Length: 240
Length: 240
DNA sequence: GAGTTAAGGTCAATGGTGTTGGCATAAAGG
DNA sequence: CCTTTATGCCAACACCATTGACCTTAACTC
Image (cartoon, rainbow over all chains, first blue to last red):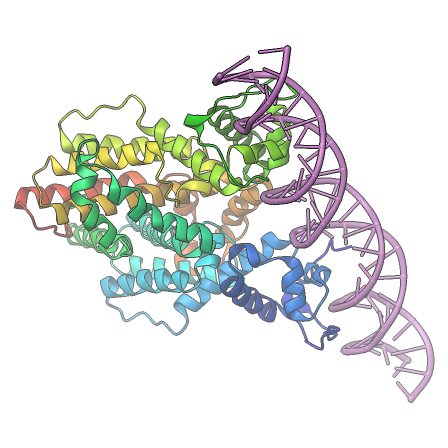
């Protein structure tokens, strides 16, 4: 069995599980998100998710082809949450900034899920809607489509890349997270100036900055470059 | 057992395994890298790695506290390879560009390993050496240390973030990779202009661009911004 | 309402995983 | 050569995703 998965839209018979719950993609994805939050990235397993839903693990395979497809659905939910309630204002620069920050924030709100999904392409509804919206904002600038696509790619990749990187630190299993953070104080901060002058000289500043994200800076740089391209009517300089 | 792991430097007795191989961190990490290449991210397991080394899986625990510590060692090896043979030229801008590209290339050469390690902090030798080198290049500009650290963080995070994101696509299990890529042709390229005008208008451009990385562009933007800061003697504009 | 169909549950089993405790052996030091 | 013990091996544990076979009952038809 477990070959064909019925698309959510065509589901007709919803039998309650032994635990009494009525399942749907929504309930499963939401429970999965909650479990990721509570038990960490490794804590999301078919068994545990089944138990949390009051259902047998194998039931999940009636809704998703496997854990990988569930992962894609979780990612799509993240994108959906990022843009839920958002409307373009017509100010393309402000809109782009808002979308970038929304994506970044939505992912960081669920770091474990972000790590799992930031690099995937699902082709699901929210993902498509988001891409359509971003392309719409960029095309409203009047830039030629090749330029639009170039900026689109840099914009989206940057948002996802930084979200994934920053989320990864937050999503580490507690032990590993503590270890990694301790490295800064136990190793870097103690390197002698004789052998590592530059680290020794900046150690305090490094430690102080480690918890801040570089994304806002990077985003402004990208937006600045895009604005320059719009002003030129075309060319996309480096801004330097 | 498997509580205390003897540091590589203090190892004295090296008993050959049943397969005749003599183990060391080096041989283990190199074999692990090779296995990641051949069998994919999921293909690196203690059992398989043991077999490849001609040793029992549990033997690995004499060298690393667990698979996580092995992961950190793999990451450090990647950094080591990135900067092996590199010497600063004294031209800080060119040096920074070279280091960024070297890191990016070294990670992409081992995408499966990159995904596993790009977001970790190991405090191991190669990582420390790399940080010391980058800080040295930045401090040679004469910028004040807070500014140096600000740029350092953006530079390193950007390189790692893009490396991780781009590596992730390459490192997907073949099935998932094919699926994700197919989405562009099967889903995005077929959306009707009535419902998704912007995607429909740019679909061809999008598909054509999907395999190019946005990192080179992003790197130049960052370098341009850093150069502006150096010219000003301090301030770090957005470049817009 | 009764009968039929099959969606959508459950159960049990398979072959994988990381990790650990106990034991064996041979390398190094005297 | 003898002792010590680092470093290897073996067997076992608890967990994992996934699947095939089975069963129950919701929903549709008459």
